Image (tube, rainbow over all chains, first blue to last red; front, top):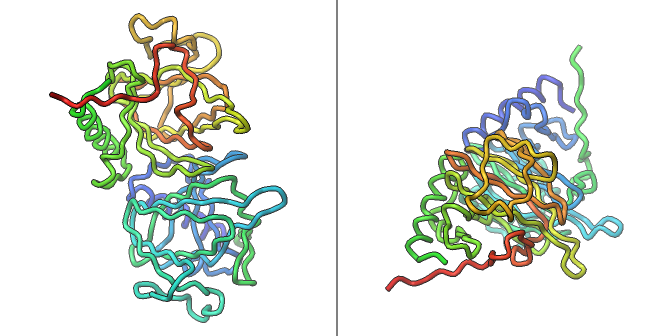
Length: 182
Length: 182
């Protein structure tokens, strides 16, 4: 759960970071930035901001913004019915970005969210430079996090059905509830 | 046909324009910018520069650069075998960009390449602002051109098989021949 003020502040902050990263967003598009707290109600710790440039029935292009030290929880893109599952390629644009994938534990720069050791199972760290890219096939688990400056990255994928992603953390709800203030 | 020097100059120029548009490209990626003269041997008049960020078997994300007043010829993306044909969404980033699609002739800002009236059949002009987007379904004919500043735009699509595009101009060859200088 986030408040309307939190959502609006996060949108403005994400837009400023996109701007710093060179990614143009129109004033009238800022309100469309999705602010996702994964139902965990601590956006700055676990969350992501998503600006969708394109989302058709066949493919999607998004800009993801992570605030400083913000983490996107461990997840994967499953096959659903006849749909073969989302294939995603990310390309790092700006800031400090670390991905965690299957492989030997070599974690050095990053950290696991406090008390969440059990739901971040992947510890193979890839530190990205701007321009670096990674591709994830359906079911390939991953999570990622920003360092001290935050991070801005592209996510290019086949049809996005984020509501159907799988998460390691059973407490996660993909739909963010926005609460009106009193 | 273009010479190696022309190709290299066009790559450097495209990279500078991307930089001006805020789109980061690594030094080691400049050489991968595709310079396309459509076999017409007058790149500055008809041609396009393409930087591929991602191209998998399911989707592609590219940055297209047009030099000032450069035109990408009229074309469409056909179905090939079982493949349903490329669906493409463009998003304008920077500069002066005009698209031409099916519809009433309202051409005002743009121009038809000299002597090529017969192979630019579409005259319905859409002048884009940064952030504006257009989606083309398979077989939907289109062409586009830059104004005085040139243009930088995204092209997001399902699998790209540019070699299979259809062109109105029968003189076009999609593969650009690069000639070694003597």
